[in-house]
Image 1 (spheres, rainbow, N blue to C red):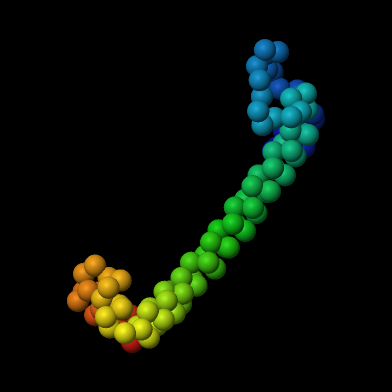
Image 2: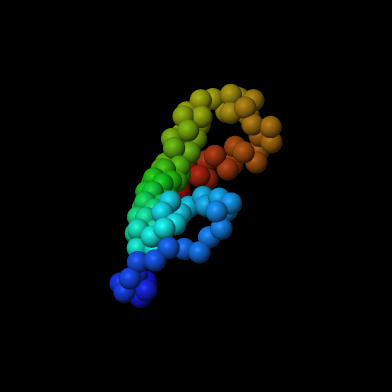
Length: 99
């Protein structure tokens, strides 16, 4: 970045080389600007996606509690027919609901 403020210069890249991320190989200044903008977009999009995932994960425990309350509102015969290990799951359902 120090060289960026002094003078603009091209990269020494052979003509048969394919560049995926550098769009302006003839200008160091433009390339550094382009890369910094691309990195900013990448990091802000990543942060946005991670924030949405975090919000969705926070809602999971409440959804599970609601589902378990709906299941427990049914008869014990119904609950035991749903659960394979009925005694284990029956106790687990009520312990989660009562938390």
